[in-house]
Amino acid sequence: MAENPDDAPASDETTDDGRLKRRLILGGIGLVVAIASWYIGAAVLPRWWAQRIGDAVDGRITFGAFLGISAGVIFTVLALFVLWLGFRFRRSWRRAFATLVVAAVVASPNLLTLGIVIGDGSAAHAGERILDVDGPGFRGGTLVGTVIGVLVAAAFAWVVASRRRNKRRVRDLRDQSDRED
Image 1 (cartoon, rainbow, N blue to C red):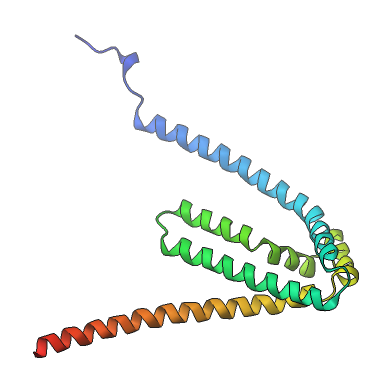
Image 2 (image 1 turned 135 degrees about the horizontal axis):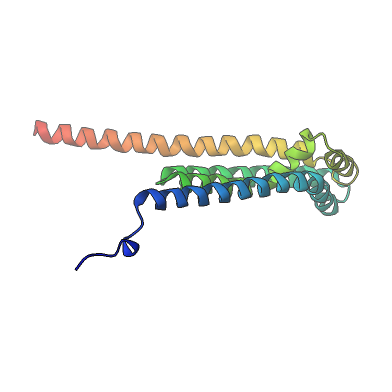
C-alpha cells in the first residue's frame, strides 16, 4: 500500500522554522513589553517607593537610618543567597535567567532606592525630595546596610569554602593514615 504524501509527517526543517518564528515573535513581544515597563516604571516607581518609605519613617532620622540599614542588609543577603543557590544548581540558561529575575525581585527595595539616588528623571527627583523631608537617613542607611549585607554574604561564602577545604584535608589525612597503617 502506497503512502499518501499528504499524510507524511512534517520535516524537521519546517518544524524548526516554525519554532524559530514563534520564538522570534515572542521574543520581540517580550522586548517591547520590557521596554514599555521600564519607561512606565521609571516614571512611577521612584515617587511611589519614596512615598511608602516616607510614610513609614515619618521624618524620624534614627528610624529612617535603622529602616535603611535593615532593608539594605536583608535584601542584599537574600538576593545574593538566591544567586548563590540558583547558580550552584543551574542546569540550563533558562534557570540562570530565572535566577537573575528572582534575585532582582528580591533586591527590588535596594534597587528602587538606588533608582531614586542615581536617577535623573522627574520621578527620581521627586523621590529625593520626599525622602529628604519624610524619610531622612533612609538612603544612607540603605547604603550602609548593603555594604554590611555584602560583607555578611562574603563571610558566609568564606566559611562554607573553608569548611569544605577542611573536610577535604581531614579526608586526605585519614586516607594517608590508613595507607601508613
